[in-house]
Length: 251
Image 1 (tube, rainbow, N blue to C red):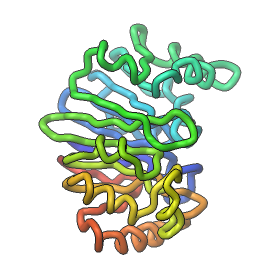
Image 2 (cartoon, rainbow, N blue to C red; image 1 turned 60 degrees about the vertical axis):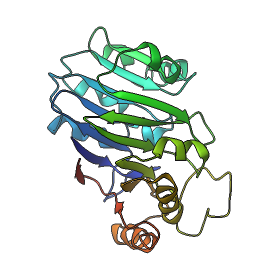
Image 3 (cartoon, rainbow, N blue to C red; image 1 turned 180 degrees about the vertical axis):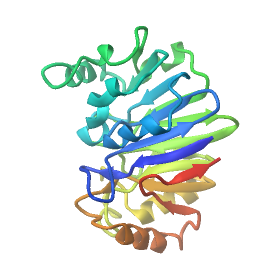
Image 4 (cartoon, rainbow, N blue to C red; image 1 turned 120 degrees about the vertical axis):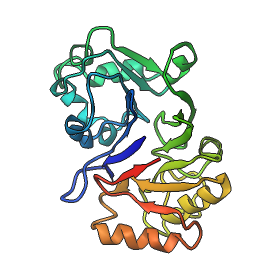
């Protein structure tokens, strides 16, 4: 499988980053994690004749603003969209007139909107589990078993037990890094992580590698600044990768 970082900015787009979207491609289907403006890039990468699954961590705009572009893609099969438990109505209110077209009219007939409580009753071609994360709004992380590999997605969240559980032993963790070094380390209820906290989570969870994303656009104002912050945290966990738009990781 190929994991592509399509948008790695939190909050808003900049000259060097789009808002949040990560794409996982396999031979048989594609999984999209969050739908910031980075989602526009799937047009050049996704085989729309195959199934597509869209998993949303939460409904903040930097993770959903790209949803109004859904009808610019030529999906040839019904799409499954997953939102956090209890958020189906909020999603439907967000993706409708007068803000954009109704979500159900932008995807093929038979597409489904599910919340995380319904995953156990719905068939997916991959293993999927989810837990709520530490954030001011309903927010879930995902643990995916795909082609014999485990990929965990943690965005947005502070350091918490559920994040450790979802990350445990994963081959790749895609982790949010919204905060600057030294700004949330001693705040137990912080809604975001910084590079050192991400590195500590990777060590405690026993993961193979971790790529950082969702760099707060108001905090991280250049790619070199991101890279320097992540490089310092590699003293804790060496297999820490700086996420940038269009980065590909092959598993």
